[in-house]
Length: 399
Image (tube, rainbow, N blue to C red):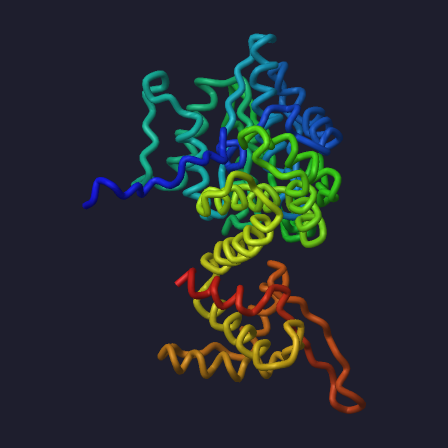
């Protein structure tokens, strides 16, 4: 290997603190923009916990990137600090139900986060215990270590079994906890999630409900400016932040995606040895974010959903205009041919209709029911929201 080759980039440093632009970064309160009312509502709901009393259980709704997880994490951490002034101990566990999607996984993760084995002498192995035993150990840990436990269940609608909601919300009432109490914050992208719950769970879990609306362009601009110190001084050209904010507000109102675009723009400037981040960098970053977002969504989708999407993209390319409508039967015919190509047994038409409905929920496609005429009934038109080239690239990237 040649010593003269520098594989680690140029001398032009763009970022000063790139962590400020990571999804996992939890900002200080003054960096949380446009969510004062939501933070106040959450604080009021869990305020009893700071005095050692039972907090209200909460369900939080809203589209991705509207600050639900951010605000929930921030306010529970703030509650922990405020409780110390009252000599009250609060434990917080955050469970990503997309990753920990079974009841056992979610309980194990909760117990592991709240435990300190040297103090409790209780072990929480990653596997090997029954669900009931994980619960027993969780109750002992909470009773031993805390006055109150706050459990955040993010993307709670992805949990395969609602039993965990029943167990957590009724732990005190059922006598599982005797020395402490517990509160649950459930977070969902589905506004109608509550409708799918058992009536018993609704009565104990849905004590407070809050909806987070999408950010507008002004709020996204303020959010991005509050994190602009992620870059070195004078690196960002004046039009960069307004450009990112306008793109994000026009398409999704998703602050998380806006922050991703800004980070990608900086990376593109760095990769190309630019002295500054320009609006051209933003446009390239926007394309990268689209592919990254879709690849993430598609990578989590079943193989047949990917084939349906590929069929939609190929048909859209064949027609005039990227917003060309595709009937369900057209998509199904090409989907079957793609299954033959991959030597995979195809699903029935009814299941493919369900897949298309799921893709609409994920905002990957749009659907519109059309009337075919007297005696012919209705049919569904499907349209890709994103460029078919981006969809195909994302499908290929997720394989």
